[in-house]
Image (cartoon, rainbow, N blue to C red; front, side, top):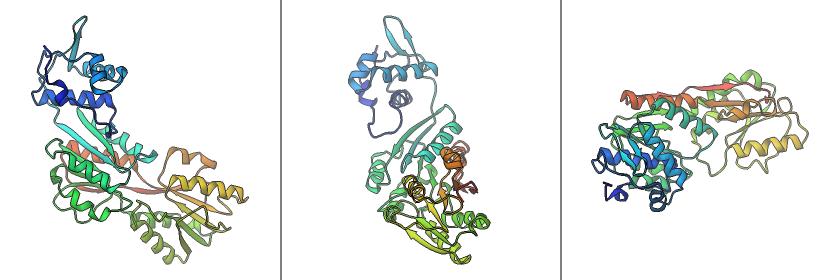
Amino acid sequence: MMAEPFFDFVHIDEYSATPKYLQLSDAIINAIELGNIKKDNLLPSINELSYKLEISRDTAEKGYRYLKRIGVINSVPGKGYYISNADFKLKIKIFLLFNKLSAHKKIVYDAFIAALGDDVSVDFYIYNNDFMLFKKFLSQKKMGEYSHYVIIPHFIEGGEYAKEVINTIPKEKLILMDKFIPGVDGTFGAVYENFEQNIYDALEQALAHLSKYHTLKIIFPAKSYFPKEILDGFHRFCQQYAFSHYVVSNIEREPINEGEVFINLMENDLVQLLERIIEMGYQIGSDVGVISYNETPLKKILLNGITTISTDFRFMGAAAARMILDQSRTHVEVPFKFTKRASI
């Protein structure tokens, strides 16, 4: 027989970035773990799932196919789907919270998921650098619901209060990714960038190539989620090696002159910068230099190659996954590298 209260504990979260078919399958597995669904219980039909959960038939079918593939459910023609195996326990259930989804964040996500393997459930949320949404997501989650909370904490405003929210998470369940937050107490895992030292070291590696230019400009929008430590490292390098240097808040209005190198952080700024340089007739890599923050596959081929300074995003995602699998609470600094291409 069908478990009557099925739709009391199987839900779809519209705010989650986790695919809905995985939300469906994870919810059913969680209900089995809690004893709400038992072996041989019939499950709702595809049509009923689609209607009650407001998902497409394809999504419902995909969720059931996944559960069938991993041996949780089976089906009988004319009778429908039923629980065929309740003798298991999915021990790792992760709440994954990213500030945004971009090309390089996707690299982190893919490496994280690949390193975890199959016997793991991940609920994925994106808060768009909005501190209030970040706080809302964490305040709505029961701290006993997940085995781990993996968080990338970047905010446009309100970041000074992040430690208070993060400190509500049991530290044995916490892994901070990408950015280390001062004031988070206890023993927890962290895979982080050293933003000030990283940009300083990368620019120092580029010094021989930068010597033909006289001015360095970093494009750092006034309202940005990027850590201010990046500017500290930039200023320290330019002062150490006697470069004229400026912080640019808006590339649309900034003069572009021969002998200048622009360092961009935002992908949209890179597009505008390259368009303006080309329109002005300058040669990228000789008249004007361009260095882009964060490596992505496109930058390897764009205009014969854009020079990058970037953390190792695959390392970041894989290292966070290893911490979960190894039950480690260490602090790991992510490698950072300079990649010379034709743009300087």
